[in-house]
Amino acid sequence: MDLNNTKLDLGNNIINQLKNFQQKFKIIQKEYITTAEMNILDNNCEYYGISKRMLMENAGIQAYNEVINHEKQVENTTYAEIYLFCGKGNNGGDGFVLARHLSNPHRVNVVLLNDEDEIKTQESKENFDIINNIYKFGNINIYNLKKDFEQLFLNISYKLDTIANEDECKKKILFVDAMLGTGISGNLRYPYDKCIESLNLLKNNVNYNNYIDIISLDTETKGLISDKIITFHNYKDEYNEDNFNNLNSSEKSNNKNKTILKEIGIPDYINYLIGIGELKSLSKTETDSHKGNNGRTLVIGGSKDYYGAPIFSAVAASKIVDVVTVATVSPVAMALKNYPELMIKEFKGEYFNKHHVEELVSISKNYDSIVLGCGIGLNPNTKEFLEKYLNKILSEKESMPKLIIDADAIKLINPLDSDDLNKNLNEKNKELYIKLFTDKNIIFTPHKGEFEYIKPILKELSDIYQSNIVLKGKIDIVFNKNNIKLNMTGNAGMTIGGTGDILAGLIAGFSAKNDPYVSACAGVFINGLAGDYLNKQIGYNYNSRDILNVMPKILHNYLDF
Image 1: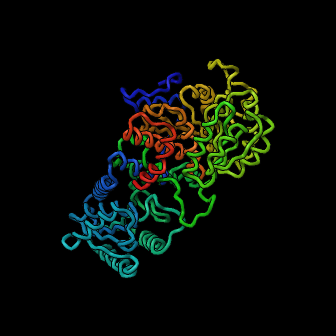
Image 2: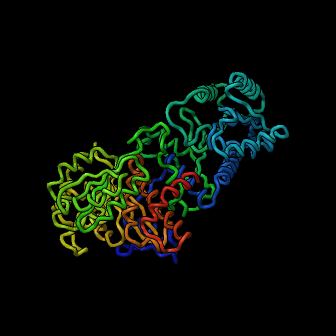
Image 3: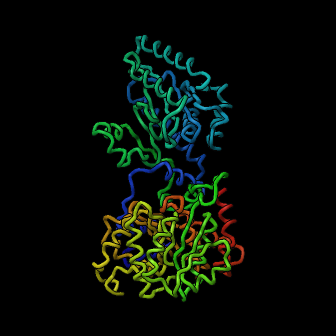
């Protein structure tokens, strides 16, 4: 795939094509994964048929192999006892799997930092039930740290004294940190804080430190001094640039050197697929929320030539946020009176013009997200309006909402000296283009033809662009400087007018309270799912209103997936 061909060919290796696309647009993916991204990936694996239970089993087996290798590194060294400190999330679940595998032939002690009924996920509960059922018959003991704290650490100290006093100094005690993993946030609370403090005291005791190994699963729990970290699938976000900048050179080297990366059976292609994970990661409506708490969206669009586009976009957004206002010109405002769920801000005239800019900029500050361009038309006065509006709103970064730029707005901010797409950028508005394409809160939603207007900017600003692009097609491509994903939902019935306007509204609704890139991914995914649902029900004989009508059902079904 090159800059002149943005279509993916399903007949060839799609991932190789995608990586070529990455190179052309200088998309540099991070060398680490955040907690939120890992949660999305876990859910997407489940959606595409790789269960979380399977991933947990694979993680436990990989950790087991590494523990055995670690034990063998020093000749004749054995672990007299192994203690696995397990939290209530999936990191604890990894620990339960590891405990099961280590219990033959080792003596294994599973230490719960929470009560059994606090274990969060189904896969963790299932793996705890297994060791709970077999511990009577094997080498597994189970403790509750809240109840057994003092006695447990007294027993550990006694065992360390015994090992230290033996003539043969080849025995050790292994502590496995399966407490929090990527779920770490904020300050640690009891008993996590006291557990870390006690483990560090043992590790720093000159009489004991030669007889102790500490291994962390996935990430090192805050404050713990581990000898080794076994992380899964990808390095976690403690290795990101911001966190690394806070470490000195020896700390950076130490963290990298003691971390071992293990694969757990996630195929490469799933990293590039949008799925249920993006949708499930979005903020949920709180039961005690009030009007406006779940987002406010402004749709700026419409002209005397196009009535339906801003309406489709606004109605789609209204399925997600609390308040939707359509800022539009007089002819469209008349049509909107049939939509009582939408608020209307009317601007006199048949097209937007420069006289509307000041009031619209003032209004925009009251919203969390804005859709700009649906049905706005290509009138020269509208082009002037757009340039002035964007310059003003982009100059007020602190109060600027998420901005979805769609349809005619993409054409009107044409960066070229003419419609000749091979010419260079227009220097007159280059500053505006730089502002637009270096803002992480901006999402462009072009189809293949509209993308031709964007490509020269991406080429010119390839080293610095930060905005998000949704390239609509048979397979949607959602990308920014550090991410690229494909959406496989949707069908040929969605070539009807209005589906792109609905998509812009969905993305605006999601982005009102969520990350712009994730919102763009969730938008294309759910929009396509609605089309696929209708296709199964009635074939290709549906329209954009039908998509809007089934959207609440699709959202409900897949948020509960």
